[in-house]
Length: 482
View (cartoon, rainbow, N blue to C red):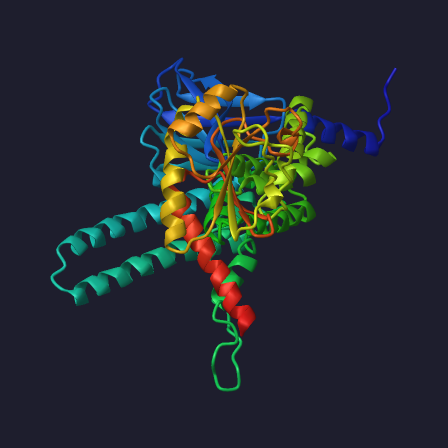
């Protein structure tokens, strides 16, 4: 019996077969040792990911093949001696051939069935030739006799750089649909903005260049192209944007991070979304800059704890969300939680945090058996005297966190600590529920309204910080008088 196939069934059969074929990348390397192992890897942010391995046959042919489609990206073919060359892989080109010699010189590559790599190698050839000229100019720079010669050579450097930039954009414009075109376009520099001027010709905004650069930073990057994460491009762009484009102030970081993530969501970059959320969260969680836990709190509250991070396992989400709850009461610029029911070394005098009337209050949690605390507390004594004498007015609210009451009293007495020292010897205070810390000493600086201005300050920088805050207070008072 003959089977009857409709035209539609035949088309569907070939479509299914084409998807099932996965990838087959053939690399021919003149001089490759038979049976030697070659690796196929791809960039991933600042690291590399191993994708496949294959052995060279007697003719120096290495075939990487698999059933699943390789995602867009810049890939590396790595030799047994850890030498490598780069190539482009896109979802639309899963079956192609590259031929080269063991030196991987761009001019000697032969490419079959890959528009992506035609453009990529074309640029590499151009850049390689420009690098020869670059080295020649560099040598002349060493021998430059005067400033005029130096300036002339610098202009030649700039011209070379401009030609390389232009070549990238030429290839990108030729076929914008190619992945390599999106990579090259991401290198395009922003156009110089035209400033708005007043009638007299003066600038309306002296920061227009900065604002334009920040607002248009991502204009030439396709945030819907997940393949950019498998190139050196996106990670470097993200790092530069988040760290160097604006002030490292928690509120500014949160604002710009949220704007970027929303752009990625709108563009449909699922892998870029995942990587960006993870990188921002991890980077600022590890930051040593004061008050950066505000960024972690924001990322946890708005992404991890509301179901927007499906890649994260339950344990990770639980850990982040529990931490968010713990740090929420003591974020910078928040009202410091009241501390009550703590008593001084007489066990009789209760001193509540909000009873202190001072322009600034240093709250420190400490333990007399903690090595770092033993160095910090006497130094606070010195600062308390010296700074108040020169007009930097502040009080110290020192909270002992353990239960060796006799040891605590002895330490306070022997070190002659002059500032307020309190402890929870009657067990009636619940300050531990509001103030989260895992080590001592832990320092918070509060303003006169008991708002947290800074925290996690080291004793070495405390005097400078108190001085700056005092100046801010005086400036505010002057403005109010005016």
